[in-house]
Length: 86
Image (tube, rainbow, N blue to C red):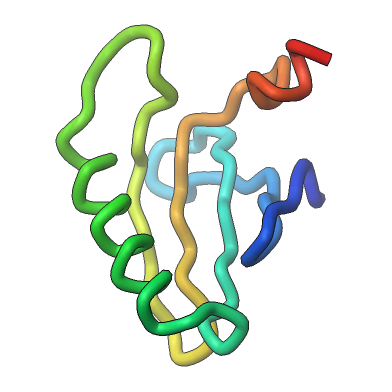
């Protein structure tokens, strides 16, 4: 179920098997991304792990496969801030 897309991938609605919670899963296809951008994405993941604030979407985890990086975040029913502001 695609709920959004960006420059390097798509965002899907998913299910956290461990908790049963609905999550947003950002798929970044690594072969579509320049190596310099991949470093920035990995730094973003490191930063997301450290953030904790009631007004920031929570980081859940990530998976790295041969072809993609998957970043799992708290699912927001109302969508992205960009969508809300439109």
